[in-house]
Length: 309
Image (cartoon, rainbow, N blue to C red):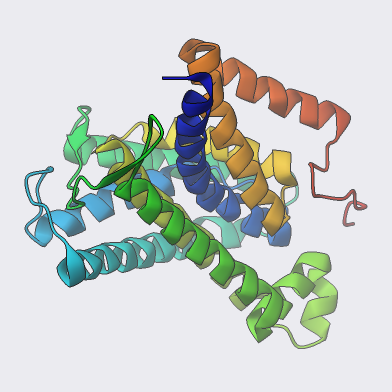
């Protein structure tokens, strides 16, 4: 394979990874933009979403890669799996906010952030006790369709992943920018007290932010399983850290920044693994995180703002 074909192949791989990281990074961004809270439970909402997608596909009679579907049956199965996964993950995010974080909303200091770490470990251990420590073969009904571009290969699963991610990200962008609730979310992010005085239901806005962010994490978990053909209780940690890095790189609290950061991190992971060494991928990614925090704390598309009193 020539260098140009190798570069094209890793670009395809990187964009697929970037789509997953972008969806996960958007959850960090939505919650931080409104509450200025890093929700570490988001890591394992992604992981739980991956398992929910797996169980949904299995309930529809799809196990491993033995069942291959095409046409309308494939579209129907994928839509059901996506909707169930996003709905379950979104409700899980709302439950986490309502039971664990709302009582701490007016408590100053790191109490809320530490609580999200505890919730993350609860989810982690629940799945570990339920399914065990071994990796699970992920149901995948996608046909092995692929297209050759020179010596590079573009598979149907990558096209599907890109389509799902782009539609969800565009949907979120238009929701935040054009809908009445999106305007309420932006107002709450700027000044929650002023928004409340103007009639915005801040509690409802926060619930919607947790629901949307967690639903996108669930979609990312389903994409992970379809892309790698496996899932495990441990996947939330690595993917979550990279998605958090993507959110910081793009400008945490900035929706387009989260999308851009996810794509950049995905491309770095693919290119670094190919042209340097897979073992050095994490070194490169987290070195970038450190450099961004030192030289541009607001991220690529973020902007510095005064701390709220």
